[in-house]
Amino acid sequence: MNNTKSPFLPLLLLLLLLFSISTAKSHIPLNCNPADDRSSTLKVFHIFSPCSPFRPSKPLSWADNVLQMQAKDQARLQFLSSLVARRSVVPIASARQLIQSPTFVVRAKIGTPAQTLLLALDTSNDAAWIPCSGCVGCPSTTVFSSDKSSSFRPLPCQSPQCNQVPNPSCSGTACGFNLTYGSSTVAADLVQDNVTLATDSVPAYTFGCIRKATGSSVPPQGLLGLGRGPLSLLGQSQSLYRSTFSYCLPSFKSVNFSGSLRLGPVAQPIKIKYTPLLRNPRRSSLYYVNLIAIRVGRRIVDIPPSALAFNSATGAGTIIDSGTTFTRLVAPAYTAVRDEFRRRVGRNVTVSSLGGFDTCYTVPIISPTITFMFAGMNVTLPPDNFLIHSTAGSTTCLAMAAAPDNVNSVLNVIASMQQQNHRILFDIPNSRVGVAREPCSS
Image (cartoon, rainbow, N blue to C red; front, side, top):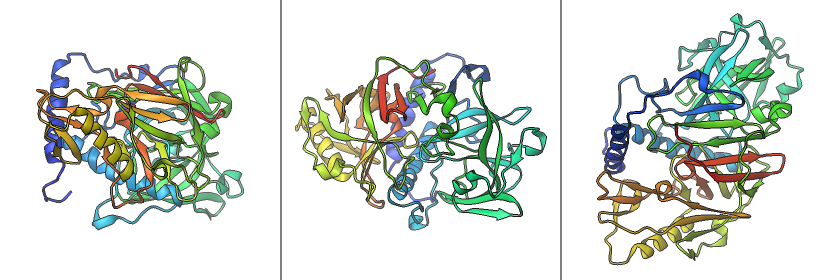
């Protein structure tokens, strides 16, 4: 980060007040016990959670934490936009480091005897990869010691999985692969070992054992791919989880900043609304849905059909993503939503800007509702999912924005703030995504 004044700084000061008061109000002791992972449900931690070891070693204010989230958001959008139409990543713009590590992590136990690691969740990737002992350039001293696991084995070049990884190569008889992840490059061996999630064991799980990494985008203790490919968690555990999972992301006001990941069809919500999943054959991991309209108050806003239409050739459409913080809409869609929101609040009320948000008010307002209208279901957001307030309530901002101009801005991203306190259910066998209101924070 350079020393130029960030346009997000006023926004961050506002968020600092918001988070400070929510933390001060609560006297609930932190609950970071691994025993909370039970059956097929895992606790999900935000990387800035008090339960996360990935917080900066020197304590940061919430303002600085949110500054990092804003930077990650911009980079995440560049990363996602690069995926929708091709498999390579976009160039790094203006010499800025591209950081697109996912935002939420879960505990996983690898090997025999088990070694516990915190793996980042990423729905845009399939294969898991984990830093192994002897890794050159890996960002964490917590690595998987493969030599201490009796169930560990490398996969040979002739194994079918070797054709399912990017850029496979053979060194002797072992299969390896190379990939680019944000600003990082990763060289890994393709291996198998037992993986335990909560109390569920997945034997002979195929993943990448990282031997060399460059850059700063590699999640410190590895990544768990939740995409739809054969090497993803869903692909390798079909008999156990039947290609079904859900997550519930916590409110930004939550002290622990933790939610849950529920694997398999058991104990998923019964009362839930669904919309069909769409597939982009160029990037099948991304979870596309058909957003057909957006309603502000009682009015469906006038959005050009091309701004919401799904197009597998260009990657245009709408995805659900847990790694982006604030929802971004392509410019025509966001402008229509913003203008109607302002009209409903009142034309005589002065509108101001704070950082990346262009619709803020310094007087109390009566907010209209915002409803995402998908094929087959409507999701009406509670105010906490689209408004940010200062502590004293003197400033209120609409917490959405237009997709940045410097990316392939054809992609609408429904992000984690708009998903908070909802159970998002991915039912791959039936090609659908479900949404149900649920208090996620713990």
